[in-house]
Length: 293
Image (cartoon, rainbow, N blue to C red; front, top):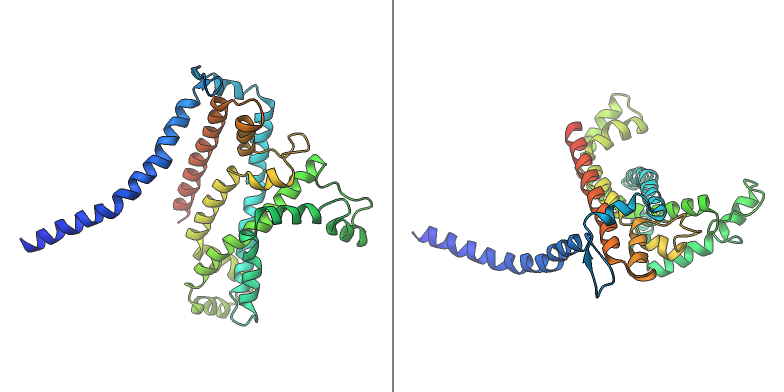
């Protein structure tokens, strides 16, 4: 009887801790999400919204700016995420070597970009990649180019700049997850692989990557979600230009809501395209990860 009473008290205490969080999440996440879904079926000014059904979703198929933003977002996802994950894997493997001196310094230096002020980071990138910036001067000095690259005004090179910027900023963030995973891999596994004649590269692909599969899956999903929601870098470095060459879906939502004539209904519809894409891609990645395991 006493054990049952004690269990009941513990359950009540548990609900006491959980309930405030559930209420806050419901008020700040789920209710706004439902309101946004309802708004996506409406149109008009904020003071005079009216129901239009699926018209906002149909409009997307005829919206050139939406197609451009969707293409750019998908391009960043397909190109940048694999590069960033692979770089983070390589760097974490190198910095996990116990024989390497100043490992802590190198780890801090690579991690610092992801906690750098967005404004400072954007100004730094615009300065480095300006027509007379360090990058062009270096490329000219080694004769890889004959004229300065217009990183900020050329549609193709502007995309490349965004990919470089995101990779520079977030590779260190993923590196930390891989480093934590590498700490749990016993050195004897690598020693056994070395005794069997495996090279460092073979150990990396045959031991390190298979052992880090759960973390690779996690970082891939989080990086996918972050890239589909990409806004800060594009808005601060290129402003979505030249034209709409670097505009992402998140920036287009912002423009629809605050920069152009306010169209919250259409903006909400575009935002749910991101939600659907995140759900589908996350499900596919998790399914693929389970099958490989």
